[in-house]
Image (cartoon, rainbow, N blue to C red):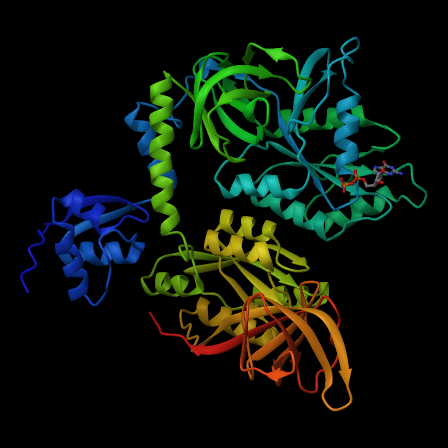
Length: 606
Ligand code: GDP
């Protein structure tokens, strides 16, 4: 059929991720309708404005004789900036570089003292006579210490927890130079300690260990040192190169020692330099809408100097710096590398982890923001399912590319996680593919795991645990694959097949819906009946089900034997309605449990 689309002879066509056939048509001077027709001939129904997957664009390109290059969001941003003659990666002349303070994130297990430590560091450093300044958490602060007769500054990001750290890294922005890992000496190494450590190591950020709560009875700081040896963090006094510092955040013991260790670690292992001159660049750490002041953003300057009056663009927000405040709410005129400042004057609220930069003028800033907005809209439409899946790995292997499979393991107990990890690392792997387990932990799949997976292009394995609510949404948005298993050998078999390039998942689980147990009735005839509210999707009689308690699968392989609406039997009950569910012989149901139902469907092979 002569559809009239032009033919190429291998010319390159650059398309942004998520481009539509219209965009494609634009680039090659074709009528969008003709491309719709071509796609139709290739067996796919695609409308002209619908955003396409990478594969669709490439398939069409190949068919028409064009060499389609899909441009990643980062590349694209570089291209947008290049239109304005801005090159963030430009080589900087050595002579322009001056040393800058380290930027530190505090991480560790819950209740080990992160917040207390951040408070202790901050208040140890309130400058005499300036106590009148209102201290406010702006997301980061800077302190000064004297080291070998010199005044040295350290910047702390004070949004404790790993979320900020991984969320930023997931967006390709790394703000942290050093991680302070807080471990309570009376509690020792705990799951989130390991999680934090894994995050830091994955980002290749050096760690200083703060052994906290040494004032407490039963504190055993040496045990912490010993425990962490197993994870590759060996204390200097044991011949390793990690600094461990005993402190008490609450009793304010040895906070200076910790700050000194941060400086020493920075000096020993990092080359922290940045240009002082030139337009400012950096990263937005936190931002919100203030009722009186409009959008306010805390930004961390990474290069150059930020001045009042500068036109800036932060992610998709832009504006002119109307005022700047430091962490003591004192007005500032300029901000230099590693300095966090609260910026007023943006027209919108940027996202945490967005990069910011000073532009030549308001117009440039606005245009960059607008182009980013347009790009974002297109990308969002094509987002789902864009990341690597086991299937992709399989096809990469088929094409003979050298590749690695990154995994995050979450399970219901440390025993099962270890067993799974042991078995996985022992798998016979060919030369083409390496398997890396970048994080493992006990408990349900969290947003943090998804962020880490997204940043590291990893697949999450949930062994007897699930992802819930917002985490599930995030995974879907980020296109992170989560695979669930309840039997170890099945997990191993599938990963092994994938590694060998023989993945053949014939059936896949399709989620139908989930219901929350509100009440449990005991009936002598039916056993337990769960009075439920359907939270998402639908519940279907005879559907397969599993029972989840606190994010952990407590029973699998169940069947919805009975389903009722009030006193009537029902075949289906939808989201937002109440129902009674009977799981046959299974009776261990408690209020607050979640019943997930699903169906097995045959999966078409790509
Ligand atoms: P986070 O969850 O890691 O931020 O922990 P917090 O900073 O909230 O601290 C948890 C609890 O431990 C609080 O009750 C603190 O008062 C206490 N705590 C923190 N540091 C110390 C310490 O050095 N000694 C003692 N005895 N208690 C501490």
